[in-house]
Figure: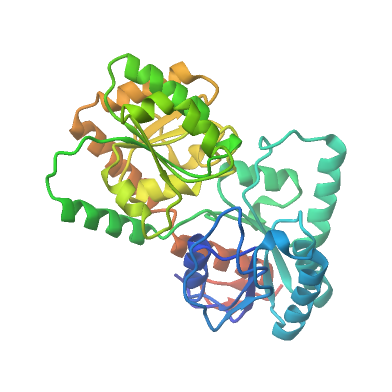
Length: 385
């Protein structure tokens, strides 16, 4: 990584979870970082919270969903007045606080960077609304950072030039998941336990778990023996339990409930394959976690990460999320592989995910900041233009 830039960077998120904390920590090698969360909690995700950091600021206590957005926006403006950042990383453009942060930056001469994992295919898009977004993005932002190819393509549609787009927004602490999964495996020894298919995420409509359950029923009917373990909670819990009632009684589906970052490695450690069948998924950070834990991947073609992280037939498979029979066939294919072949796929997952780390994210932000601020990060000198 190049020498640190002399820039004070404010990075803003709704609330801090493990993914955000890992990125903040990595950025500290490059910048004078001031991390701002709009609220201490977010019911949508139920993040595990670590110890507070002296360079972090929490604008409001309690769940984000309960906060008055105008009040939060006022607090954010005043905090930015106090901090005087030279660069601001802004979480999207769809909320009042985000627009406030971008406007503050433009008024005060700070470089504003849009953090986005949105894809054009996520939602139906209207011509007028997209034109308005493009105008807004062009006026308020100097550059952007995207999760992957699809998000970068959408940023270009919104008017951000390719040379002002950084990558590697969607990263996790790879070392943590790799080491903790390995520890669980070492502690268990050669237990001879049966592998299982693993899903981790919210039990919500966009995750498409109903289709996964249908596919697993077909897989079992064709002679498959791997159980399905579902980790997470959400609004469809009771409905999915009812759908899987027979499978639960036979021990073929296990609903493990919500688990925090300290509990997840124990599930990744002994899975045979990770499955994410979402019908709408801007990226899918659980895929990063599973790959860092050394697993083959089955991912929906609607997951933003599949273009970047899944090499079809090499470290996993990309499936049509609307076709349970096709998914069932892939489940059968994976569980029928010799263990050595699955291990080769797992090794490829580890190699791919090595390039998607918090350090890579920080390096990308450093590179983009250098471009926006007119500084050559390779030489540590400002260019004269």
